[in-house]
Image 1 (cartoon, rainbow, N blue to C red):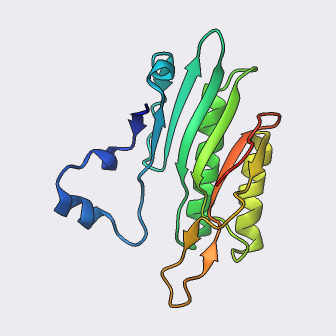
Image 2: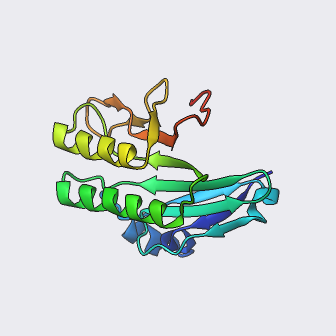
Length: 168
């Protein structure tokens, strides 16, 4: 049993036509988090002014965690990508306490084919937040091109020492 606990504004659009109009090839948002109801009781959703990230803090006698769902920019605009990396660093830092563990999950839109500069931005963001990058064992994206290229765009970033046993 899981429940939707936080999502960006676009996830609340009920009119199918409006959702389709907003779902362009290069979407500008669309993230959410789902968790067990008992965790939700001790969670707080961060107030962030972008539809590319949802952060929730969970703090009780057993947990001190920030969990986030991320959707990084999809186009080749390096400035947009760097701005989003900066936003993630700022927002996580704003809500993180000394003992807080962090887990960011989502479409990081980073792959081997991207420029070294873009890959360096991603790595720098993870390093700045002291997060390990966990890569799925198999591809997470089947491209829309005629070759149906298989790539990995989705990752988990987690505080070093947090066990991420298997990603499928």
